[in-house]
Length: 332
Image 1 (cartoon, rainbow, N blue to C red):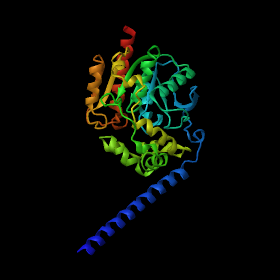
Image 2: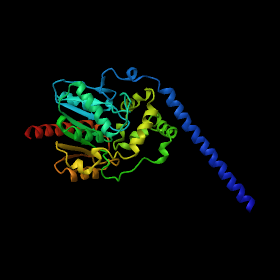
Image 3: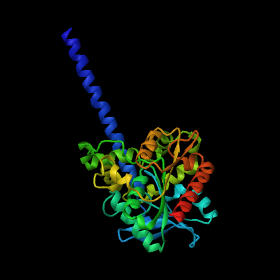
Image 4: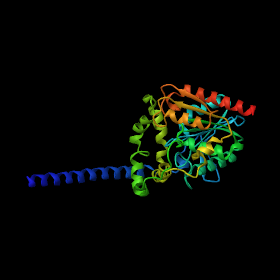
């Protein structure tokens, strides 16, 4: 009997070693694939309908289709996205006479990846970009993780802000501050994780589907947009660095303080999908407990990314929210 148990135990250990080896080999292959794929400079890979702007904190890639005389509307994208994902929204805003300005927040998209990725650093980049563009006071729109940087910008630059629109915002205001897990201190491990997920074209459909309620929105056109920047050199390494900021709490950010958020002076509107299980609707209601005057538009049967799940309804809601903000600003 003891011999049998010993053979079973040894067999189990051998099986675990084999599985671990297979997993390690698979992750290593994905990291190698990322290294082989990420060969282009941002300047060569970036789409021709955007431009690079020196922000004083690195060159920012931005979609700025005009009209130059329209009220600026700055669109902060979410995790692993970039300015191109706003394409339907920028078209709708332009048709209404607004000036949509959609930057790539480093390390995503084509913007230069220098410095850190705290909310205050992202806000400084956007402020420098808007100054370089000669844009005046703007309506600021923040989606998902980009909402934190958008809120940070508004709190630090109220004089340059007409108002704020939060879209399924990931602000972290309902969570206790925490540090990134110690395991993420291992940079090679972070790169393996990122190469298997965020920068793995084979995983893009699966990851996007987990964020949205209307699964048909994960179509080929949208997937191609999300995958496009994966060709830029260093993408996996830079996102691995960003992961430390994402996994921990940005305690120094004004937008992380409930007291600071409650003092926001500009008009605020929120747009939220009722089927969002990434940043549930309860988080919008929590924000309203801090800023009771903030309006809230709930979209039916929509998940975490309304601008791709139901673009026509979302764009109409956004344009209405902006109109209300502009009117409130003029009445102040």
